[in-house]
Length: 441
Ligand code: SF4
Image 1: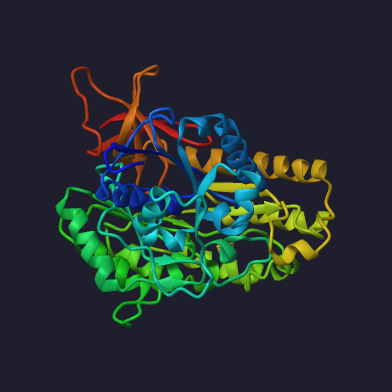
Image 2: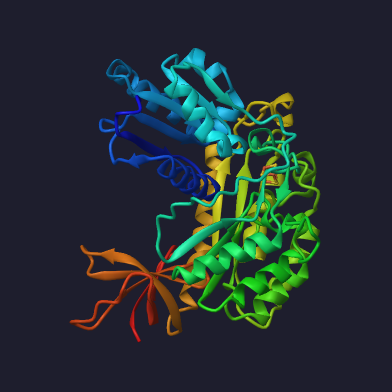
């Protein structure tokens, strides 16, 4: 990458919305540095992978991908590994993939311009790793948002909860919030640019603690909903431990706050929850979702569940299954436990055989499908507002998303083409376990 040559980069992103949004910030930063983003590895001088290590599979994928591109090193391309696998594996990545020149965790991205200069100067191994002590969040003026209607804003980074199975506290550093002033300034800027939906992000978004003490999380939600031009406000992911009733009250009071809460429970057994270090019991979780269920508005609830955590008995698994029915979730992301590096659960015996984990996963998914089928069916006949997200040409349907975060595909009268990002009322005519179908009302 000499000064004369056009600088191009290719960036591939794995993992969660936090990573997707970090990538938008990385792209903005690189473009500001004079780089041009390209669509293929072949065209790029710099190839970056923003990685995820939440599950073993995701991590393996990164190394497979790096392996695929090994041959391209002869063409003088530079490779960089960003994100959670970078932070977790650190300099070991250089040993596994010696053609990689940059290994950087998310807390170091603000130093990317300086790191790229080092690579340009011929430095073969540049690292930017977090020592968990940083107080800085990854804020930048150069975010390159990919969707012109819906934009993410990170309000809190890192995690201090140390759930026994989770790598995040080791890969994303300690919990640190932005000021509500800076979040609101970014949200106003986005509304001025035409973004109508704002999604607030954080590993524990509702653990947000304004460093200046001006606003609670619920007050921040409310304030964003008040910004002219904003039509939808979402937030993810919430931790039950910090989930307070004022969040539900804010959703009820502000029509612009979406009627959806994602509240990961992980297990229906208090004994397993304790072993997971989740710091709440089944009863406490049920108490919190009772606020949602008794709200003066129908708020959709989704969750995450892990099966096969070390020592989970059949009876404890059954408690997770019964929670599906008590929770009446509109969606459940289900996972098989897998041991992750550095985590406390590594010292526990991974006692449940993989076949048994698969069986439990299947049972959970089947039961949830029944719950969802019944829940979604109740929406037939309702008129729901959707944001237009795309088109399914093969089916002749427009793809929309409701405030409750449900996919609602719909047909439109001839010669009507709703614009991407516009809002349309749709009459629900059919339901499936994972989506709704309707026609423009
Ligand atoms: S709260 Fe637990 S599961 Fe969530 S990011 Fe933190 S450690 Fe991981």
